Length: 218
Image (tube, rainbow, N blue to C red):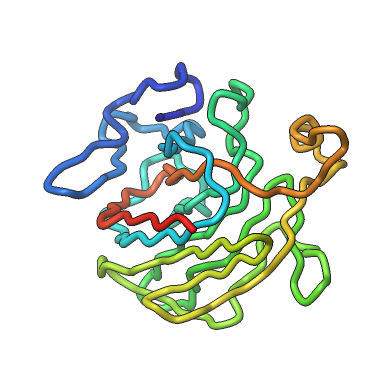
């Protein structure tokens, strides 16, 4: 299911998401000269709890005109997400966890694989995160348009990020933030623990390709 801000659920505005030769591409050639915060994502249709997800990705080309500065070589895999149908029309991102994808700019360190917790908390060594995004403990930057392999392993309450087969971050016990305007509406009977959710691939304003998407359920 595709969801792009300002468009009905399921509408693939401007052919943003397109498949060719086994590759799922995200492109902005139909967006004109202003990206206009039209963030989007393509969602897997099934709610998932315990699994290992493996995806190869590469950043290509130039950031869409009018995209935010942080959108340069930025994307992500969102998981433990609310359903696409439950997002407010003007809500840019779902309540979810995100494996953040950063591509290098040729010089600076831009490590891949931070966890960004939108409307949620996670725990590192028993301590809740204080920042929206927490950087990976092993920092790897990938420049250019090389293919990179990300993996997310979700086992009960333990979540681990990998890049090119190497573990880079681990954390536990995702919970909804009861102070968050949208997250609090997703809690059932006051239960904050997050045990499952939807997976999606982001469209944040920079062209990206995905391939060899593999899901192993536990």
